[in-house]
Amino acid sequence: MSGAAGVAPAGLFITLEGGDGSGKTTQSQLLTDWLEQRGRTVLRTREPGGTEVGIAIREIVLHHRGEIAPRAEALLYAADRAQHVATAVRPALARGDVVVQDRYLDSSVAYQGAGRVLDGTEVRNLSLWAAEGLLPRLTILLDLDESAARGRLDAANKRFDRLEAEKSDFHGRVRDAFLALAAAEPERFLIVDAALPVEQIAAVIRDRVAALL
Ligand code: TYD
Image (cartoon, rainbow, N blue to C red):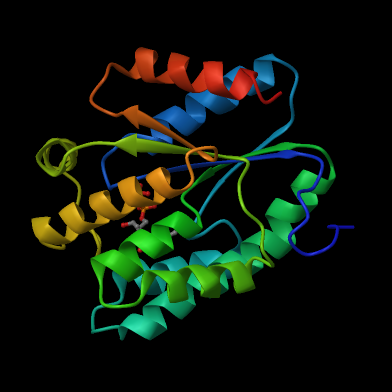
């Protein structure tokens, strides 16, 4: 059904990455609308929390009050990913659908690796094990400097979750890690300046995705 581990299935797997407040949700919605207008069936989803099990894990990783040990945190995200890929993403790709997903394994490398204390390669390998090697065809990195991102989150005036509440050097390390990941795999990544107007960003993304359809 889902094909051999690591083999790219029939559909198209697109992920959006970037810091908190970089506009991933807005862009994934616009991209989904555009794909549906073109007649594609789209699974729009996210991590953590794309499945029932994932919603329970999301509650822990984002809102648990006490300390979560770095390896425990990495394993919780990996568990969410394993469930999500096995029960939602791979079946959708096997049907030939497009999967548009907010955050995937690059978030783990950037947040649990560079942002915290774990080795990025180990975190990546843990995620690849969890996902049986599934990598996106395209990863859109919405790159925004830390002060602009913080300004957007403040303007939205919502309560910060565990990761958003981290200090700015944490978010600076996360941003640098995303840029390093993109530089290491230029054919998978599209880096977009997230300070551009929403419509302009959407147009850049559509151009790149159109070439993959
Ligand atoms: P969410 O509210 O979905 O944030 P956003 O709208 O910015 O995507 O919260 C997800 C948080 O979880 C975000 O701060 C990044 C973090 N995260 C990790 O630390 N590791 C991961 O593997 C994933 C998928 C997310």
